[in-house]
Image (cartoon, rainbow, N blue to C red; front, side, top):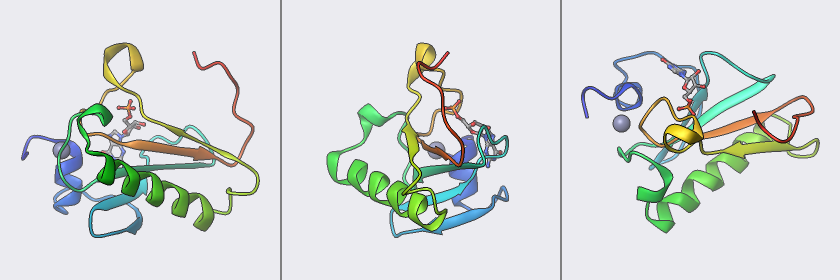
Length: 111
Ligand code: 5GP
Ligand code: ZN
């Protein structure tokens, strides 16, 4: 989708700080980090939200997110994976993405 921000990052049309990538996923730093580590993991293929993603690809997104947590050194201290979904979920970019947040204590419940 040429009008999708994250598809344009996958295509290299918009720069991003890439952390890692696999054949099917891309991980890059959030432009407005909410924690010392804030990385977004996306499927390279366009899907609107997590409910639209087939289980195998969803697993690949989670595996990449865990790999990011390890490479960022937050796997032992703890981290949070978040899929904001839809309007009430606070989703603002409608290409599914997993937030990997860590590097500080994260409060609960979310706002
Ligand atoms: P959402 O609110 O949809 O769950 O998350 C979208 C995230 O994308 C936000 O955390 C926002 O900071 C991030 N974001 C928006 N535009 C860009 C961009 O151009 N580059 C990067 N790296 N992140 C972006
Ligand atoms: Zn897209």
